[in-house]
Length: 298
Image 1 (cartoon, rainbow, N blue to C red):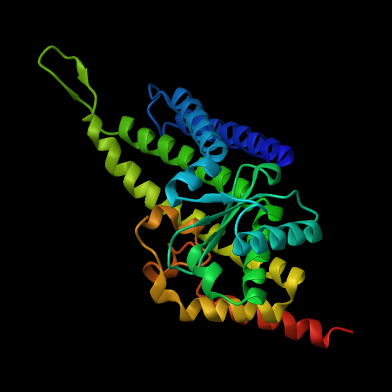
Image 2: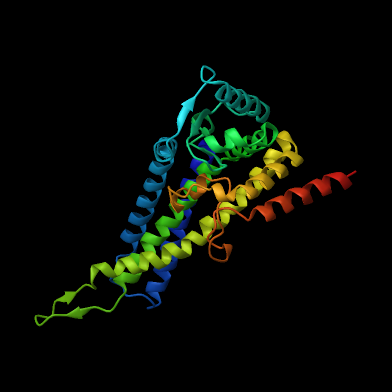
């Protein structure tokens, strides 16, 4: 956690410094007006992008609990909950991770997710549907997938990446706005462009930025699948993904696309470019290819 946070801060400073130098060169070459407040815009945008992502990260566990209706459970709960807690504990111990909080939320879908700002403050939650309907060996693989997310630091990296993207969107949208042609009134006073013109720029740039975050989100799913295969075996993870594919009709869409990163699978988006998860078929193929490589390895 501390290492990723330090790298995030260093990356932001490096990006700010690089852009500042490039903008200075562009201004000196006459490519940008000399009166554009680029440095204040740059510093302010990256400050708010970093602060916003950090706050989002710290509140991620509580937001997921409230947004998904998660009920925390422990070994004093019912038989199913005790099995869930014990299985998560065994997998966390095997993976060398702290024991996360464990929860169940009411939904017919087959789903599980992990969230939280650090391994010490992580939450692993499952839907009531997957707890009741998936065989134990396959559900163990799903839980291994979620704990792999925790071990890989995916929640931290995803949130911080989103912060960098948000900072770029804020900065570039306002830079484009202040660079728009300006008019003068009858007294010769310069009038700034219409303020609401910033919003279309933010929308278009945010759409482009989501391609980056969606790509990373898909990439981390393959890594979590591989981590689950290492914990419980590739066959169990393949079987779990195949069962998830057969249960897609049970997907709970009440919470909307904002919670897609809390799904173990999600419907494909436009051309797959904006999808938070790869197609299940591609994930199964990747696992089987990895198994084949292990089989032929000396």
